[in-house]
Image (cartoon, rainbow, N blue to C red; front, side):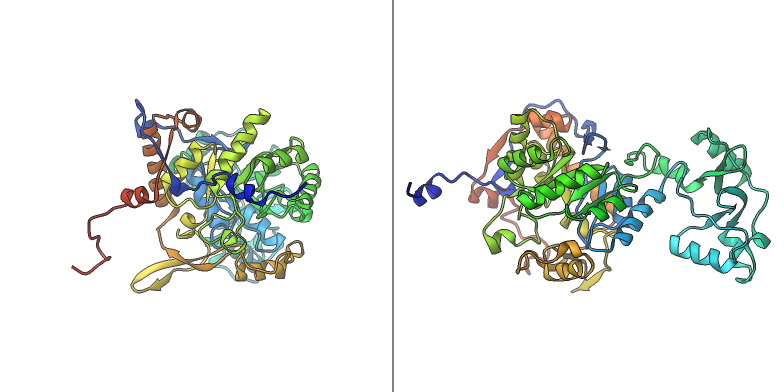
Amino acid sequence: MPIDFYSKLTNASGVYTFRDFVLVPGRSDVEPSKVDLSVNLTKNVHLNLPLVSSPMDTVTEADMAIALARQGGIGIIHRNMSIEEQVENAKRVKRAESFIIRDVVTIAPSQKISDALELMNTKSISGLPVVQDGERMVGILTRRDVNFSDPKEQVSQVMTKEVIVASPDVTIEDAKKIMNKRKVEKLPVVDQNKRLLGLITIKDVYSRERFPLATRDNQERLLVGAAISPYDLDRAKALEKYVDILVSDVAHFHNTNVLEAAKKLTKEVAVEFIAGNLGTLEGARDTLEALDGRVAGIRAGVGSGSICVTSEVTKAGAPTLFAVAQIAAAMQETGLQIPIIADGGIRAAGDGALALAAGASAVMMGNVFAGCTESPGGLIKIGGKYYKPYRGMGSLGSRQKRFAIDRYNQPAKGIAEGVEGVVPYRGDVSTVVEEFSGGLRASFGYAGASSVKDLWVKARFGAVTAAGIDEMRPHSIILPGEEKI
């Protein structure tokens, strides 16, 4: 049968982007301040805000993940580092806050003060429980103790031996009262045999009050995810004890070899797995079938990030809004309720609202978070303004770093699919999140929706022409900095 090439053009479906639509206002009795933005990112991971930071080496390491989890979202630590470094980043997030820290860094009484100083500096901590024979607590050592001691002295000569402790059933309020009354900043938790079970810090107690929307696990630690290659089982196994989700970091997940690798990995790793990136209904169907119930979420969008040139270089892509709608259709078709993460091209809250309205449960952003204080990389001053570095994971520099450290990421393609540059400095994560979530709530208010699920039902899309896009921007006015008057 001859191939009908012409029909490939005439029957082509529309592939839409955020620039092509607006949310049509509807009757509303919803006040933006009352909108509930909480969502399920997976079956077991609940977010108070539908915001996820992208696993890029200029976006998410421990500092970003900590800051975003405190605001109610979650950070996905990038994989452009060794397995050991990625695990340590995840551990840092889990240690950043917890009512009772279980993974306590300790020291033995026979060790030297110099050993304690090294531990404090490398782990960024200010106190060490002193433990005999690996479990029985015999004292505590603080930075104040070591700063005024001879580095050659033994810990036992300097430590505080009479330590205020708590029992395993201590509550937050009890801990707060004890620490305030006894003027201590660290409260070890021990059993009746003085075996160290954990550690409570005053910083963690007050952090719960300072960050009421923080996303936490069942041990009251901050949530965190990590990016992996589906081929890298060793990395996945090393991370599973320390992260809440593993996120596939593949440009084109709808690939037979990738699906087979992911199938094997999800059988051997217990932590929830988010597949992606995907862009079509068929891709979602095949992924759900191949992984047979072991998909906790799907990253939607191929080639539409601000630093991605995949669609330009290869003319292949599935813009995020189109991809979300396609995958949402697959979920309706199968009757499954697997959350979708809109990934790529989201520049402002309005784009995020469109993605959520099309069926997403959360939005993943790189550009928006790359400009924050907590992203990796220092400030760059250009022409009196400040910027931060930003590059695609498919860029030449990022690829070279990844190939040098990760044997599972040797180049399958001979071209770079990302660019490198800078983005304007935006301030700290809390400021950016406040602005973005405020914009989302306003969008929901216009649509008359009180929650993300409500938005799925009530949102109406309006198509916009090229002329309409120009009209919706500020126009017929000279803005400061654009022209000389």
